[in-house]
Amino acid sequence: MAAEIVNPLSETEDTDIIDPVFALHRGGKMEISATVPVRDREDLSLAYTPGVAQVCTAIAEQPELVNDYTWKSQLVAVVTDGTAVLGLGNIGPEASLPVMEGKAILFKQFGGVNAVPIALATTDVDEIVETVVRLAPSFGGVNLEDISAPRCFEIERKLQEHLDIPIFHDDQHGTAIVTLAALRNACRLTGRSLGDLRAVISGAGAAGIAIAKILVGTGIGDVAVSDRKGVVHADREDLTAVKRELASFTNKAGLTGSLEEALEGADVFIGVSGGTVPETAVSKMADRAFIFAMANPTPEIHPDIAHKYAAVVATGRSDYPNQINNVLAFPGIFAGALQVRATTITEGMKIAAAEALAAVVDGELSADKVIPSPFDDRVAPAVTQAVAAAARAEGVARR
Image (cartoon, rainbow, N blue to C red):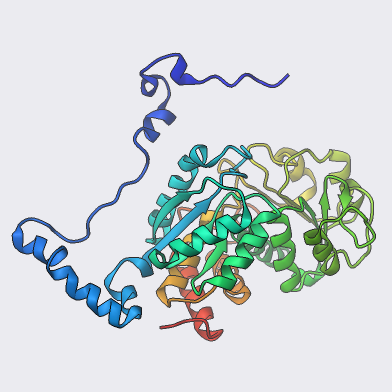
């Protein structure tokens, strides 16, 4: 029987006294603050009318000046429809706002990037795309957040086709970038390369597919992806269009059957699905395996079990070493892309971000440190610089 969800507001009017989480969230977690003074008539005439008319006229004559004389080039829209929020699922746009506010303050805290939460009251792909396109003149980039698969793939693709600003679905690409960085360092630590590895991914949703793509693109030996019905392979007749594409570039070994069967002899387990993997299956993995069990709050393989068999263990939790946390990626990625006014975020920029992230702890590697802490102040500058350089090298930078 499911646990009853108790509304704390029904028990007491002063919830803040009994629950510090509610106390922290009261009134929201962010505000807009001015960067210029408005102390007197002269300040007012410069910041607003009549002075602002000069700037508006200049932008009307030279539209690219909007990036110099407004905050557009430093502003990201954090867009959701509330259909895949954290581990909560489809809870709707209003209930998603605490997460979107949290995302926005992480942009500012870790990357110096301004961000505005936008929760949309529609789940229709074309309506979401149309809405974001209409809002786009106000923003330098769009971070798609907590939108369920497979719609998230189509929304991202269509927005990239319509807009010439960075579009980034963090649930996909942020997770993939941080996973790649940790995996590269796990290889360095154990004297292997990506090409030596056979990986199994549990979860064929947004994160699992993005991880598979970036691993194949960077030369992993082989990777198989498993969904609720077992390993994704080309002969399965129940595949969606997205999973048919996935089958076309993964699973070179032609594995069929269950996740547990695929794990036999595998070098890497990557979990982005939830559920539980039995210890008997874990015990059959290759020697010196890597286990990245990233479901929150309960990893697919508990770290105590994983450490019995693996050389490197990572989770999505902050109370264990090697946390695979998207905050290591998205602030620096957008900071770098906005810095050079990139028109898009390319695969090369994502790989550059992963390599820069891995390099932060290159001289400090240990089994408990294949990825930096989110609070390592070297992370965002390293990622920002690498992404900006990659954008220029790939010809998508405008400055």
